[in-house]
Image (tube, rainbow, N blue to C red; front, side, top):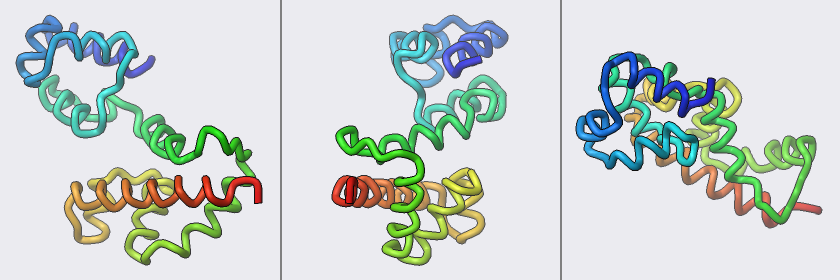
Length: 151
């Protein structure tokens, strides 16, 4: 079941209309509709709030593995087209360029599939800090892949 279908089913189980759910989340009904129809996906913060309002765990809203794949897919430049082996090799060259803490967080997220909260607990940092570090690392990775694709 995809994310949108899960949201629609959980909303139905909670006995809420799209309008009622939107009011509780302080978003538009149109956004709820877009989530449910797969036009948009809630980001991690939105999914966490959605889970809280619906009284379920975040894993019932969004599959963490899907989210991780999407995060990394955004790093691959559209015009580069490197294959999986090329990317793995470039990752091995890229990771030492990150500071040790950022490298550790990156590996915990994208190799071990830890959540930002779990990573924060391991590194003694807040979830927002972890998200910022990972976002910056992904931007650096995207730039690195773009510069080194085809070499």
